[in-house]
Image (tube, rainbow, N blue to C red):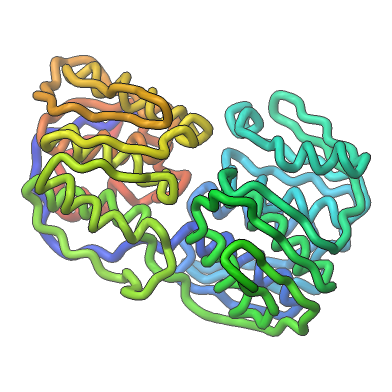
Length: 400
């Protein structure tokens, strides 16, 4: 799908889409609770649909209605040799692998080739150490093992999704366990989200100190509630405001634990200077931060190495697209610099790199330049209503 823009300015009020990060965690927490739960405010993005499908494959009864999901987990983890389709969701794959290893049965995961190219070495090393099966192919992963409770150590500079996946499995096993994080500890905010979600269902999980998480045997209970708004996707809407639009964003929890809440602070620094910003704890913000910096006076970003293992190599993808507009990025050792640049659309079609955040970041740039992006269907991964929402606010965009 292609999107062709004319220069536009947005005005109006919009509700931030529900948090994908929180929806993943609450859906899995509901299954772990063992009791019927009802979650509202769920956005059926491709990633969330992947997690719902995987829960069903593990025996959970789930029904959906508009933005409401009803979870009856009576049969959870009682299926024989399940097949889990993760589509392109890294969160889904990394969250469910440790749970699948608790079954002691052969479990097959499917996903896109790009998904299976993304790092899984933490789990692979664990399987080798425990003599479990871990066989990865182009779009398929086969595992078999009998994961047990206990004390585990993980590096803190890996994706927090590995840590969260381990926590889910240890909560399911329901015996006293612990996870020690070896510093430096990046993306802790995502672990805070995991613990907060599990505590909503009565799980006894908490930080014993800065680097140690304790999981204790506990009686989990039903929880029903609404998924909070997503700061990650709200950042793309708010970026328009720094380019002359007037958009009011609702449905954002002021005291949210979401690490991407930092975007508003970073946007102000980019709009008012040439800052150096650390994105090691908020890598999902990188594309829109690069886009806004390119439209302003530039910036330098540190903690960028993990961008290579996202849906695309996000630093390289943004460099390629900005180069088509007469700009580009400068790469260093775990750093990326966005120099001051004078962007112009010259008729060359931009490419979304099958990455939802690249598509949305480029859409913000083209709100000033006009132009065309191909591969815009990637927004279905996290924010299916993105184009509908910005058109409602006044965007002049034609979808083909």
